[in-house]
Image (tube, rainbow, N blue to C red; front, side):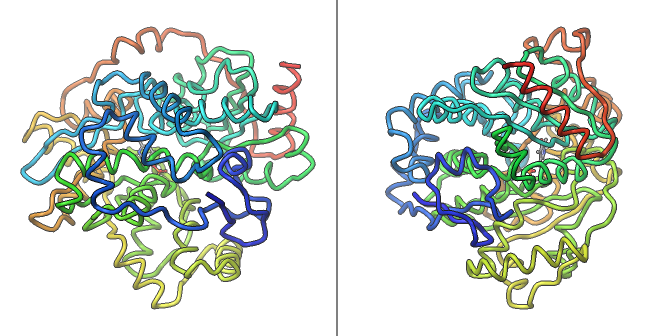
Length: 465
Ligand SMILES: *Cc1c(COP(=O)(O)O)cnc(C)c1O
C-alpha cells in the first residue's frame, strides 16, 4: 500500500515510511492511495475471531508488504494481551437499540490504548528493521500522552517528550503521565491550551533541521497508523450486532476527529454503516460546521470532557481531502486559508456531502452531567463525561430500528469528580492503577515558547546518549 499527502507535495511512501514520518514534509497528512475493499463475505469471515486476530486481518491491507502478515498477527496479539478484559472491546447494552463499545480496558483506561499499544510494537519492529532511532514528540489533551508514555517508556530506540496544557488535564490524567519513570521520557507542561501544544508540535516538525537532528516522529492522531489501529473495533462491534447483514450506526465523542475518521474508513471499506454521529462539547466547531457550514475557530474553553477541548481537529484535513475529491491543491489552499483567517466556508456541494456523511450533536456541561445521571439511573451504567456525550448524541440522532453503537472512550474512574457530582457514585481506580495517587511526579512547566520546548527535547535526547 502506498500513501500520498493531502497537500500533494510530499514523496509517496509505504506504511513504514508513513509510520516514521508522522506529518508529511509538505505539512499535509498521509492517506492511502486507495481504500481497501471488503465484500460481505470478507466481513462474515471475521465473525467470532479473537480481537487481535481480527485486528490483524482488518489492518493488513493498509500495511501491505511493509510488515509480514505473520509478524503483524503476533504484534496485534501481543498488543491486545495488555488489556484487562477478555473481549478487549466489550459491547454493553444500555437501551433497546443503544450500545456502549467499551474501548477503555487498556493500561491507561482510555481508548487511546487501543491504537497506542499496537503503535509501540509497530515502531519497535520497523526501527529494528531499519536500524534507526527516533524522538517521539506529541501533544495531549489528556489521554494520548499517558497512552503513548505507557506504550513507549523504556523502549531502546525511542525517546518520548509529551506536551500537555498546564492545569487543563484531570489529576488522574496528569499523574498517569508524570509518574511514568523512565530515562527516555520527558513530560512538559505548557502554559497554554491543547491547541497551543499541538501548534508547538507542528512547529517542531516544520523546523526541518531540528526535525532531522532529533529524528522526530509523531504519535498524535496525525500519525496514520493511529487511525488504522482504530478501524478494527468498529468492524468487531458491527459484526457482533449482525453486520454485514444488518446496518449499525456509530456515535463518537470527538476531539481531533481521529476516532470518528476511523469509523468513516470502516464504512469506506464496505462496512454497512447507517449513520456516523459526531459528538462535541461546548467546543463545538465540528457541530457548527455540520449545522451551518461555519468552521470558525473560537477560544478553547475548558469543559467536563477535556479530551475534546479542541477547536482545530487535525484529522479533519483527511476528510476534507476526500470531500474535495482528493484534490491536493484545493485541500492545501483551503487549509492555508483556514489557518490564516481562522475560518473556512467550503463550497455548498462539498458541505452537502459532509452533511450526508456525518451528523453533528453538541452538549454543554450541564447536559453532559444530566446524561450521566440519566444513564446511571436508568441502567446502572457509569459513563465518563466523554462517553456520556457519545451516548446522548447516539440516542438523539439514531434511526430506528438500526442499532447505535456509542464509543465509550474513557473509564469513569478517569473523571471521578464529574462522575460523583452527576451520579453520587465515586468510581474506584482499578487495582492495576493502585499507587497512582501516591507515586512521585516528574515534569517541567514551560511557557508557550518554541525555543524553550526545543531545548528541553534536546536535553532529553542527550540524556540517553
Ligand atoms: C482522545 C479522546 C477523545 C477524542 O478522540 P479524537 O480521536 O481526538 O476525536 C474522546 N474521548 C476521550 C476519552 C479521549 O481520550
